[in-house]
Length: 382
Image (cartoon, rainbow, N blue to C red):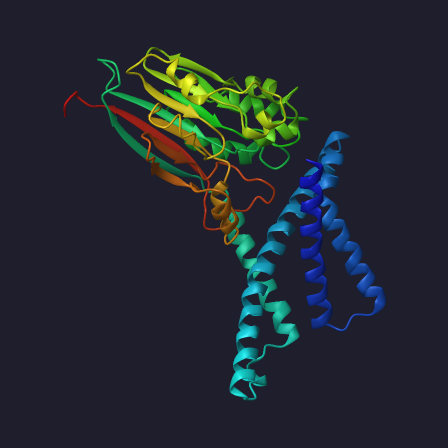
């Protein structure tokens, strides 16, 4: 965790330095104004940390204000840098063309002011759009025909939410809007594939009550994500239970004699010795043969030994990248990033884009989703 925070603030601080240098190149600033701008940027760099401090000391209004300002600024800064990078590539191309062709192309070089104002304007517009997109939950439908439903059960509906990140930003009316699609789907079973709560667990009673009221005919099941670990395994599982979910930590259960659900802890929990290692293949084999088996696992990685022993794995974690073009980072880290995949060893994997947001309440070209999986009984041999 310490290494993560150190890396985060080094990178985030570097982005602020880049912004400051671009601003200084675009405008003539006195030393006093440079100092003032630097102080504001230092405050914005520290905002994520200050939010946690304010939350723990029950300064709810201060924490809420800091989180919205600080995290919206984070999105804007990331997009400013992404657009600036494109312009830097353009400048480099013009420069190389001028050098190789021995031509004067100075008229094609953008001014320092343009290099600051154009990315800033684009970032503001994209952040506004992304903020609105984060509120528009898409319902993704997945239909699976299977011979493994018992006689008399023609359809069984599983609804998946993932990466809700209930906390200082995802709460109240915003949380209600995100959960409305899950409630409208009328699930037989509701599952959460990790990061149901964010890194801070104070003052969540109202939000947990909203989750608790979500109806599911045969129950609600959840697994831990990395943010449950960050929040603290002494409290996070209890909060998930308060939200009405049965948390599966290396467990497999039969649901109303219809399907089997197995759930495993996130790998960060296992790596830190806070959970006993469980072989997924053995866990799944403990469910009755011929049962439709669902594996809940936060990260979209598969165990080759377990492939073929489950019918469907449900995962999340990647957020689909959350803010374009930063999905490229998740592309490097994971083979399965979002959507549906047939696995080479057998079975199917669905990776949710996530229902909430982490950090900035912004999603750009990767809207939040609630996944509705309908299992349809197929006659044997058809």
